[in-house]
Amino acid sequence: MQFVQFVINGLMAGALYALIAIGIVAVYKSTRVVNFAHGYMIMIGAYLYYTFAVLLPDASWAPAWLSGWTPEWVIAGKNSAKMFSPAAAFYDWIPNIPRIIFGLVCAILGSGLLALIIERFLMRPLLGQSNFSMIMITVGLISVLSGFKSLFWTGDAASVPHLTPNPAFRLDLFGTPIFIFGANFMSMIMAALIFGFIVYWLRHSSAGVAIRAVSEDQSTAYSMGINVPRVFAQAWLIAAATGAVAGAVLAARDGVSPSLGLFGFSVLAIVLMGGLDSFVGVFIAAMLVGVLEALVQWQLGGTWVEIAPYVAVLVVILIRPYGLMGHPEVERI
Amino acid sequence: MLSVENIDVVYHHTVQALRGMSLDVPKGKIVALLGSNGAGKTTTLKTASNLVQLENGHVREGRIRFKDQNIAQLSADALVHQGLFHIREGRRIFSELTVDDNLVAASYALKGRNIRPDYEKIYSFFPRLKERRKQVAGYLSGGEQQMLAFGRAMIAAPEMILMDEPSLGLAPKIITEIFDTIRRLNADDGITILLVEQNAHLAFSIADYSYIMESGQIVMEGRSEKLRDDPDVRSFYLGVGDEGSERTSFRDVKHYKRRKRWLS
Image (cartoon, rainbow over all chains, first blue to last red):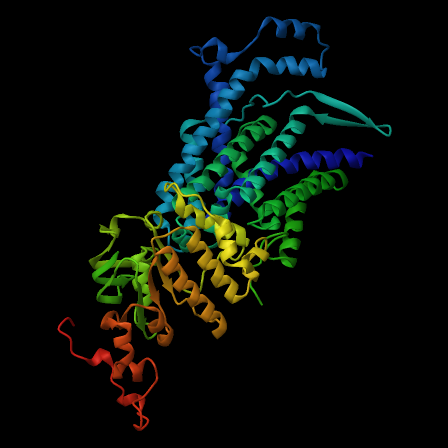
């Protein structure tokens, strides 16, 4: 029954991959640009979260309401709760709420601003040029963003507060104990909700129709009266916002460090496996890779974890070059 | 309504597609633009709808005015909001979107104009689209795709439509339907139409006024009836020789580009 434990771990990791992947797919779907720098945008998002949720509230001049919110009932609750119980985790989390909200909002705004700058000054001037040049720009952005990060932050790893309470649950399934960390579980739920919302929005709103129309044929989208540059900006904003949330979750789970960028980068392989232009396919691929990693870790040990998912990705791409659920072009025969 | 005044259009700073092209489309009329392949008909339309910039084309000289305002300051999408809609060559429907979503995309043309998109009107106009409204548009037949392209134009409630070869690749029966539709759009909704067409017979039958283009400029213009009876147009564009005369070799046919004009 260890199997169930590892599948659950895999799903929780997979949800995070999915959350990262949203941004790559959203940008690709509307602009046909594979954003190689998305992982590094996530890293910047994580550092922004770190700055506004840890560094700033801990500064001596920060207002008291920001650094901790401890009403009477929290202190009382904390004293009465048992050590390591879910209730204790909950009361531990309450004082962090102001800094979490402040950090997350600032991370989303900051990432959004960064994305708008990238879109406006690096991508838009290249409209109408070959897509390849835009893709090369995103490759260059990797170095720019890593350098930008070193300008403001050190390379030391640091920890940041979880977005949600983080109790450890222990379940007994047919006699085998299964551990679940609350924060990981909650971020899985959160990722699934964000994912579901965006897919629904793309399918059923007129803004979603505009994004899909632009992705298929820019100049005809123009001739429908769609403001194409604004659609591009929208896609980059979606990528930035989901990326900032993913960054915050990742930072809470693994700690903030420059390696977050590389982690985000590796999600690109998952996106290719799912099909660059299919949210659903990418979600399935993210879950598959998450579970596969966990199972490999269980059966073959940690050394295999690094390569096993990529072998799977390779196999899928060999069989279906456009990914699990990517669109081969629709053509009437 | 639309006046093209002496424009020069150059692609990639090297290829000159239009030289001193001028034409005028009065409000409420159908005007046809005829010419052989590569004469610059499509470029004229793209320049009028400001799409030419997306293909690295630049207007070097002259100007285009729509409703008495110079279009150079407007972006392509803003021009659509002003009421100028372009049905592009080869229909260019969004083949991965459903029929419904194609129409929703066109409803962006109404942004800021206080008109609600009237989908039911389109579906009663083209009942065949209604049967297929949930289908992916790429799987429609050519005729249905052209209907969809027209449907998108109608959703956009334009004052003027630029039509680029609506008969392209369609069966004769469907072409007749399409041209009936064009007539209805003009007569019922009062939409001004600039029509680019290879089929000169059809174009003369529908247009009030016609222009003939060759290598980037207008070589002939006039009321459609008058052009239709012109002996040169008859032999060159309609393929009808003078009665009783010998078959003439293509080499001997008069090419208008050879005619000396004071402009060139």
